Image (cartoon, rainbow, N blue to C red):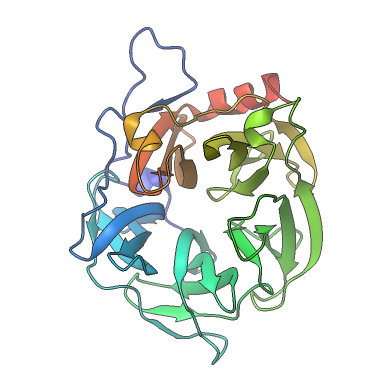
Length: 327
């Protein structure tokens, strides 16, 4: 497995002098604009991983007909990206049934010998698509993980108790004014079961920013305290849904057990590129790079469903913040 120790350049910017923010934005956000490939109307909610002394990613690019698809891209430093102009073409993986009306909101993780991709796959409504690649050139689509309707499928980076594990958020066929995080297990990345509830949306009076629905974000990170899960939370305001970013720590061996969960959010829409766009007031995390030795965390997030931005934190501080500000 490629680790961040092998990477030429970890994306990073120090916290501003005098700031006490646990998580801070890159000063040159957004790092990917809405028109960064010729066909795009917007590029957002995308996933990146270390790859070949640099980085590779799978990006949600909606075209000017607002058709949703995923595209591969590459970077030397995790900040400047070259995204392919044509969408990923899937070959048959563990199934002949690779129908897809749309693909969006991908996540990527290296497990064992390959890079696994999950995304929201259009098959009579949204469900969780699964695929894999060895080189970010050839991609293979597998059986959908679940029945419609489901979104935010996020794999754990290693097996738990001998099985693959995935977080997801059962939903509806629309904009889903509800939603809790569940975990499911599989022996083979094809058949999924043992579904357990992990975390529910909060009561309004306890933590209103996450009272309507929640969903898993980047691939969970294993820490000394357990699995750090960065997630999005939503409140339905008089101006529509507002998405912000929080964090939780799940038990290492039984990740359906929540040890800590932030009452305040880590990062909420405040900058113009987060508040103004195709869908205003959205911070939607989909990927995170971490460097344990240097205590660094870089979180990639979609902003206003229009562009890609990045924020930084010290991993140990996020863990401490989650514990000290837990519901």
